[in-house]
Picture 1 (cartoon, helix red, strand yellow):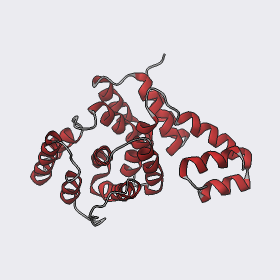
Picture 2 (cartoon, one colour):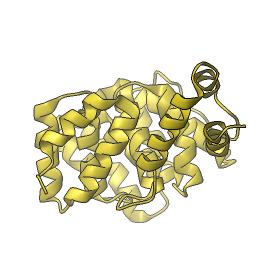
Picture 3 (spheres, rainbow, N blue to C red):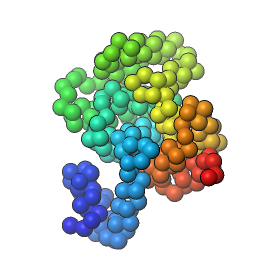
Picture 4 (tube, one colour):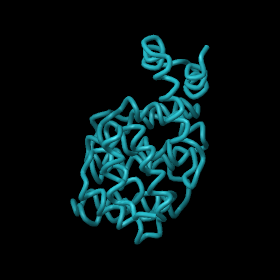
Length: 238
């Protein structure tokens, strides 16, 4: 088995079909792609777990379930909890709306399987309110339960601005990671002005340039070279 096939078998337990086909048609291309992925996903100023769970959130927001589910396994293997995962999936609402939350349920259900957690499932066409209530069941502290109660109240009030502010506020997941995620979402959908805006917002929350650069590497991995063009415009020249 070549280095590329061995790498992906280690990551996913099996060699995905798309990996096998890349190898079959051009083994050298797979080796180059494997090297790129290995560099982008390596431990750095963002941990491997953080990179995987950010990719879950980004792909939920842009409705790309396939990549979202792949990275769900990486996030859980890296130590992400169900509570953390739920909060990242909720942030995706700020870009992708209710559809992003509905798609995100595929990630959460897979995480339930990976963690051997027995819990009732929820319909994939559930409303935003229903999904927030569902995730609230996994809150483990009084502070987190209060956070979800406030979210539910804001969903019911239809105050979108206040809801966005609350979704981006620190709870189990720190607000810095949420602002990094929002920057990544707009990077992967190639919205230059919005990427720049969210990068500036992230800096105001204390996110340093090194983390934004590493965010760019994983955006490149999931959305291609054009996404690097977008975030590179937002990065401050060293």
